[in-house]
Length: 305
Image (cartoon, rainbow, N blue to C red; front, side, top):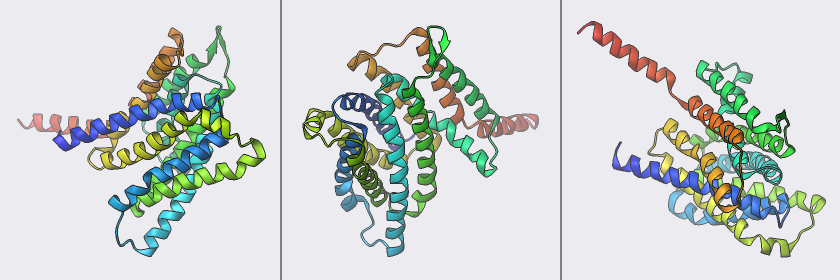
């Protein structure tokens, strides 16, 4: 591993840490403001935080077609981001920060399963990951020896599906668009949709916003703005599989943050469930085919020695 790859890997680890702590900010902010108010404030701040990056990292003479596609793709992904984060913000009010972190990270397993709808093959180790994740979710949802799914866990699970769809759209569009213009548009549209729905479902409580200002600032400026920018910079120098594995640590950091900051307590059974979900997430990202190819090459070379 080169020095640049090591630095980028550490930067991705810091990003995962920032995003893990963001679950605490969301949980704390939910005590003072509704999910729409939090989402609108958060993503408008995120868009503003990234604006300076447009000057330093975006193309100076961007073709008109690319600019339009960046705005269109950012708008579509912004709508998906709104749906996913809104469901997450509702769910996190009714479950622990640690459980929300691990359930959200299931999007890594959901993504290849969505590929089945488009007749894409799913590798055997991914099916093993699905089985491990189901067992882990079962342990997380057991209450007093009974299988009981809390409404908060359901909201966060559908949030994971939303993030999976959003990531698939990002993977499709990102090579064709300017990432900074795309990010600014995505955050602005997510905030705008939340603002449009806000008068119909929540009172606009400015005193609540002031009470939750630290949580909103962290989730908006640091988690959305700075975190996303760090991810863009770091992923250029790290292999996608390694990057996704490092980003999976977000779930672990959310669990630790919930315990240390909010005093969330998980039972041994719930911790075992979290462990199985984490193992499933790592297993789903292992480059099994490449490993097999290397082993086959070594075996073949050994025959001629």
